[in-house]
Amino acid sequence: MFELSPTEWTAIQLSLRVATVATLVATPLGIAVAWLLARRDFWGKSALDALIHLPLVLPPVVTGYLLLLTFGRRGLVGAWLADHLGIVFAFRWTGAALACGIMAFPLLVRPIRLSIEAVDQRLEQAASTLGAEPFRLFLTVTLPLALPGVLAGMVLGFAKAIGEFGATITFVSNIPGETQTISSAIYSLIQTPDGDTAALRLVVVSIVIAMAALIASEWFARRALRRLHGS
Amino acid sequence: MLRVDVTKQLGEFSLQASFASEGRVTGLFGASGAGKTSLINMIAGLLRPDRGVIAIDGEVLDDTTAGLHVPVHRRRIGYVFQDARLFPHLDVRQNLDYGRRMNRLAENPAQRARVTDLLDIGDLLDRRPGGLSGGERQRVALGRALLAQPRLLLLDEPLGSLDEERKVEILPYLVRLRDKAGIPMVYVSHDAGEMRQLATQIVMLRRGRVTAFGGTEVLPGA
Image (tube, rainbow over all chains, first blue to last red; front, side, top):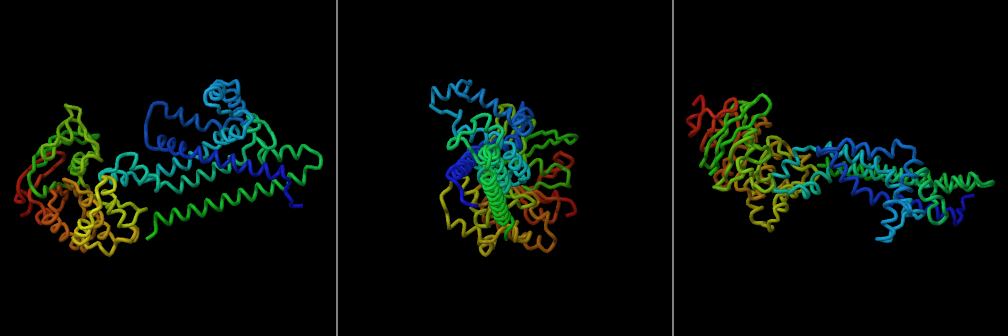
């Protein structure tokens, strides 16, 4: 029973690629936004906070449709990107990564923000009296101390990205080999007669990937904690 | 020479201090709540005065009428906090090296050896701050501040969080520091005994005002 077909393999590889790219691109951005929200007061801060959380509360199909309107071939941003930079998101795996990145963003930002807020600002003061300019201070004190939260955010974001369905299928459809991730493959299979066994195989794969991500994050977090409090 | 002439309103509390000190160790003496910590935070640049001037050896660090405020990391003023504030994710060696790295100074093994000897922290280099005693932590914090090569060292009740036994352990190191390190210091304390042993000039603060300035003879209970 557990012989994966080429289509299923492709969907698994695509899901992993989409989620990895989405997480890696979203993480630096997420760290920057988390730092802004944790450490700075500025005009429009609550609006920014709300905007980031929007994908979490909107129906995913709405987010997907908005992406299609904005980043589609004829969309405002999409047309410009295609004409000037040759970057196309619509009906490509890169579009799936964009949709997953946006859907995962609030889950990625929250733990990072909380862990930055938890960093003792008195340590940052000490670092600045030792000559650390703000960006190096962030890299050498704030970020290492917030590392457990960064890893937690990355794992949560990755898990969300790999499971994303609604926004992705609305924005980039369900094209085998290009945009058909595990989720959309399962969706197709359960609509097909005799697709149950194949769907179940992918369900098992989903569970394995999710478990592996959770175990990995636990391991990283424990290592990071030992680094912080070890004697 | 350190010249301070500042005013600062902090809620209900108003701080207004003016003095110029030439001494090797300027003692800021006063009860808790007198404004000592606010005052050295202003010297360090962590707090901006509402009005006034702060200058070291003729170099102006704060001048509110000129809109001048040199940021903390460019002041080259070392700060030893009451609570040490060692970086928990770095070992002692990396803590000591932090200021040198941030100021992009060349490695100077001779100087590091001198400081670790002066403070007897050579055996602690591979340890983490989490595993150090309060006294050891404070000695490492002193070394860390010194190795950033500051032009002035601020010490905010560095013995304040230690019990009597530990105080007696650290005090001789501070005296050695004063006599050997050649860096002018501002020493904050509410303990007249510590002041007598360390300070060469006293700035007495009371409820945000300078009430006396002079040698150690201005200290109470002589």
